[in-house]
Length: 149
Image (cartoon, rainbow, N blue to C red; front, side, top):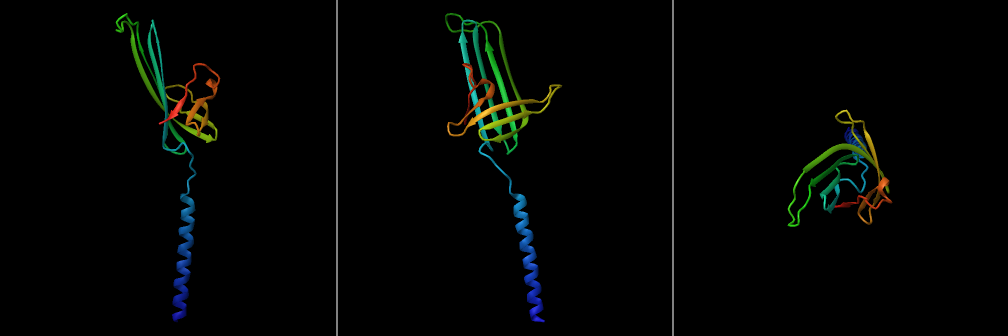
């Protein structure tokens, strides 16, 4: 009788250990170097017609969710004393999307919003240099370079 109880308890312990091992495997989530990081850029262009400042960021929240932010600020003509006159505009937009990262290629698909279709953006990530370059601007003199914060 004593052997049956010990055997039964051993069997129950074995079943519980198998279920806990299986549960651990289900919780494993693939991750990448971009998760929980923010990358940003800022560019300014000063001339006689005014000052144009542009900025943006890529905020990787999970292994697939990203928030893309872009903005600009324009101030009109500048006089000889450094004062701005004329037009002033400022705008900033944030869009949510999903991304796929297979080093070094990064593809971001922005969700369709306000009647706009979904948009796909392609980038090259250099983890060593901590930069992200848009593929379309990779050879441009006006390139946008996202840097890791």
